[in-house]
Length: 283
Image (cartoon, rainbow, N blue to C red; front, top):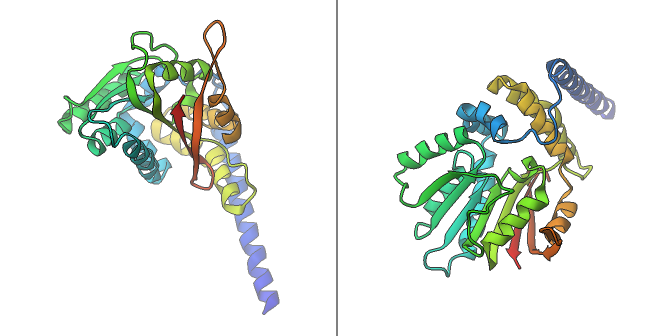
């Protein structure tokens, strides 16, 4: 009996190794002729190219789990603004307005300003907002996260940013701008990917899926392989949760390097440590 069990384990291990080899080889061949995107590739122009298929690709790649991740973030914000009569909310990197719509439905007494550097993504979002008849609650506008100069200081009661900060080259500049437009004591939640640091079996599998499966599927479904090679690289190069949390708690803003802080209230790990929800307070 032990010998039979050992044989099954060897077959399973051999099968897994074969699948891993095929995936890595396919990844290499698929991206062999694709020019490596620069670190600042994740701009509005990049997302303009994939806007029409973005929602569908997201649902496929994340097996619809991304809906739950966003819901977790929105529920957190809702709880934090529950005592405010008409909260003003900011959704940065709003894209096709998934989070903005969730916020408006969960907090109907509030208003949402969604900002994004991709006009094509915003156009998709604007249509979704119209279909939900939430035009009077949600406003979507073009903006670069590194420059909110048209927004007044201490304006918003809460802010969200889902899967956007890793695409900003000057992350500290963007975080300083978000800090400036938030009211003291307000909540700021960031939802973001990173490569799992743990060596557990499921963590390793999640890391493998992100590195080798997601880029291929995304490239095939979108017809834009360079854009999904950027996705792979941006996740791989993003700071660890501990490093990113330290950055948020000690921002150096402006020409004089004034220190600004987001207090890290909670770090929620999801999807085998490949997705993090940073729950912070603007100090």
